[in-house]
Length: 107
Image 1 (cartoon, rainbow, N blue to C red):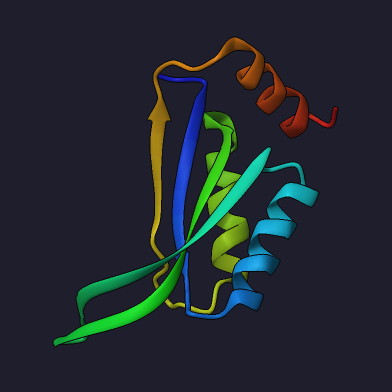
Image 2 (cartoon, rainbow, N blue to C red):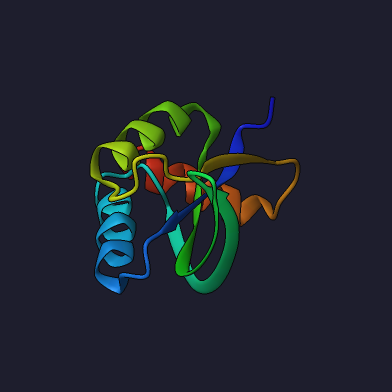
């Protein structure tokens, strides 16, 4: 299993919620970096096809922190069932990955 991962989650269209989740994860040292980008999602929910403007968060962290990141997001997210998907990082720049280590282990 990879030691590093990127976790994807979406927020509602609220920039405030995206900022709060991003800032909270970094302040709690559960993520080294959280990037935000606006997206348009089309999906089926409760029997209807829905199209929403959302904000995608790309969370850079260590794989071992996934359960804590998931719990942190689900406790604060406005969605009943937020997207939370972990993608393994199979390789990366050594200096960058060392930085991820430092920022998610308390320095």
